[in-house]
Structures are given as C-alpha cells and as structure tokens.
Length: 271
Length: 271
Image 1 (cartoon, each protein chain N blue to C red):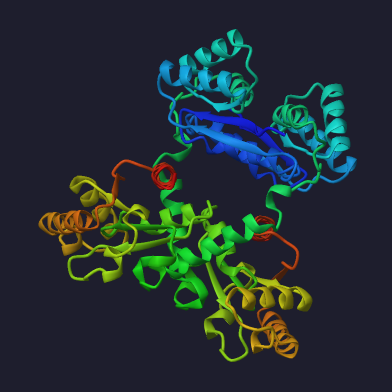
Image 2 (cartoon, rainbow over the protein chains, first blue to last red; image 1 turned 135 degrees about the horizontal axis):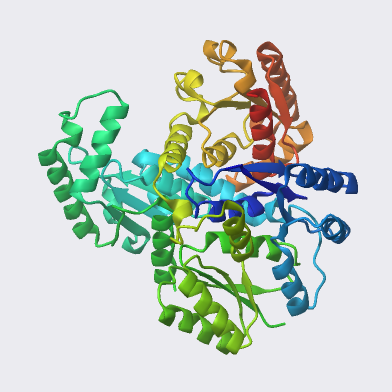
C-alpha cells in the first residue's frame, strides 16, 4: 500500500500537531500502515501556505495544522476549501471556545507556548538540576529536590528524572546498591517527597540480561544473577521501610506512565 | 472573572490533550484569563466517564479528551450530547481520516504511543547518553554521538541536549572555555554532526548577571565581566572556524526552537 502523507504545518514549530498525529498513527499496525510526515514549520506568509497547498495537492496529503494568526488561518481554510483538501485544525476548536469563555482576544502570536518566561526558566533549571544530581552524585541535592527517586540499577531512574524535569520538577535520583551505604540525609528528608521504584525479579532479570547482551557480555555475570537480584531487592525493600516512602511498581510501565503516577502522588501529598 | 475549567480526560495519560490545551491557553493573557486543569487520566469504565460528566456539569467545565476505545468514545459522545456539554475530541478527526486512508482497523489500545518498543528504548538510551556525556565529561562520547553541541557557558547546552535526547538523538555537549583546551577528538569527528551555539555579548551578559543574582553574588564577578565575555566569544569563534561546523544563534531562542533548527541542520546534512 502507498504511504499516507501527513503534512504538519504550523506558524511555530509544529510539535503540538505532530504529537497528535503520532498518537493517532501509533494506533495502527506499522507493518501494514506506512506513513510519512512532511513538516512545514514557521509558516509566516501566504506564499508559505500556497506551498503547503501545492504539496497537499501533488502528493495527496492531509494537512494537520496549528495556525494562530487569524489572517493565516483564514487563508489556509479558504485554500483548503477551494482545493477540496482534507485537513485538521488542531487548536482551532479549543481556541474558539476559549475566546468566548474568556471574553478576551488572544495574542495571536505563534510559539507563545515556548516563550521565555518564568515557567520556561523554571523548567530549564529543573533539567540542569536532574543532570547535576543524577545517580546520587551529590547528597547536597537532597534537601533542594522536589522529588527524590530511589531504586535498584536499571529501574529507569535517569530517564524518569529527566521526564519529570521537563514538567519542571527538581528531581534527584539515588541508586540503591547493597555495597554502597545511601547518604544519611536520605533518611532525614521529608519522606513524602521520596518515591521508591519497585521492580519484579523476573523483569529485572530480563532487563539486565538484555543489557549484558548489548554490552557484549554473557548471561552469567553477577549483574543478572538471580541470587544477586534477590539480595538487591531485599536491600531495596529494607531501605524503603526505613524511609517509609511511597512505592510505584515500574515493572511493566513506560516512563511516561510512571511519571504520571509520581506526579499524582507528589501533588496529592502537597495538598 | 471566574476561572475557566478545562477537563483533560484520557484513557491513557492525557498528555496529548494537555499539550493542545496548553498551546491554546498560552495565547491568552494569564493575568486576565485564569484557568484550571482538571485531569482524569486512565479512563477505563463508563463509571469513570460518568464522573467526568458530573464534574463538567457541576463546575461548568469544557471536556478536552483523547479516547481510543470505541465503546468509551461512543459513551462519552452520547453523554456529552444528552448533557449539552462543551467538548473537544483531540484524536477523533485524524483517527477517522486514517481509518479510511489505511483501510485498516486501529488497535484501539490506550497508551500505544508510550509502548515499550525499539523506538522507546532508543529514546531512553539517548536520555541516558546525554546525562552521561554532559559537559564534555568524557571525550569517548564524541564518536558515538549523533550530535555534538559546543558553546560558551550559559548557552543552554545541557537542556538542549536533553530536549534532543527526548527526540532520540544521542547528544554530547562540550563547553568552550579559554582555560580548558577542548579534547583533540573534537577536531577529528565528522564536522557535519557538530553544531555551535552562538550568543550575542549583550544577551550573555544579561543571562550571567541574572545567574549571579540567583547565586547571591554581585555583578562584578569575572563570569559576567564584559572583557571576559569578549574573550570567551573570541575563543569560541576560533574553535568554530577550526572545526568548520554549522552555527545557530541562540540569543533570542527558546530551547524548543533551537532544537528544531538543530534537527533541520542534522537531517538535511544526512540526506
């Protein structure tokens, strides 16, 4: 079957439209349903729109767009109409509702969601914080962190910390390994900001074997050894009991799902 | 004015719907136009939907939703209809188009966009890579990286690396400081994967003064000194000339915009 062509057109970067398109595409079998994204960011002029319309006509593509400047949006709509093209306006319906509800005119400035305001700098600080205090490198991060994640090796602490940092939380993660005594301060911080990542023995075994294969090592290394894994998990559970913190089972969860659980726990405790 | 209530309802996490809502909200003056998000992730049953409908009725909220299970979507639509509620279906229109275009039925499984497939693990690896090789810590990352970012201090190398990592690029960043000779290998790698982040003197001066204020230090420290900044930028330009790599001016750009520029350069060079 022919590839389905999806034009992502935006007067900003187009990441909102692309995320919606990706969420939809992920619902189809990638072997049977091939697709191609054609990206047209920073649409500024009618000529830019004419180019998009031309491509949509030539390549039989659907146009998924986010345009906030009224004159560009109107021009796009009229061109789509006269060319009888398929299109989806991602922001239009909600913008229409908000205009009425707020009884205010919007700024109509593309890319405002990326503007350099306090929220933006808070996010940047959080990302730098998570890099700086990754892997328990410096216990001085513990009192400053909004969230402290603990877990055995290979429980995705680093990417989870980064994911939460992109949501503006300052996150420190501390690996729990029998040979390394965790910093004393871990038992002194507010336990409600500490979250333990639990993983099943089976899952941990599978992930580590995978990891060893990637590193070109055999199965037998201590890292993936079953007795060793039991010992690590026992040690982890002891630490969790001592801290008395919330636990999330990450065995079958994607980072995004675990992050959602973490945020729910943190926000419900801070109320 | 009263807060506008926006319900984000999803049979997965709801991040797609929330991103669309945030993009729209950012177009309104936050002082005049107050809003509140009410999140209902993991909608699984009709009772979950009944709760959302109840809240929408009680609090006069608009429902912005992503539901991929047909029975849940149909139930939501009928309840919205009988209750005469305002709503926006984020994925519905594009899903409808894709079903026809692919001539295939979708999986209808919530959260597939977060599934644990190769693309997912590639992203996780990229995030860990960017943390591991942040700040030029280990030149061994240079040949392995997809993208090498160079720049003086405070050009957002770390958050930019992380942002690109979330798009599955393996990124290493190397700070350029007159006192530290960059690793020899920087001049040996394929210069087409190296990107230099240029910043204006004025902008750098402003950012650093801000930074010193945050750290509780005065303006006069060397870090924000004008002569020092000129010297650093001169040194940076010399390195850029030696490598012969592409340059992006980041002076007035948000990370997301710079990331978009980086990806365009890298993708166009790899063609």
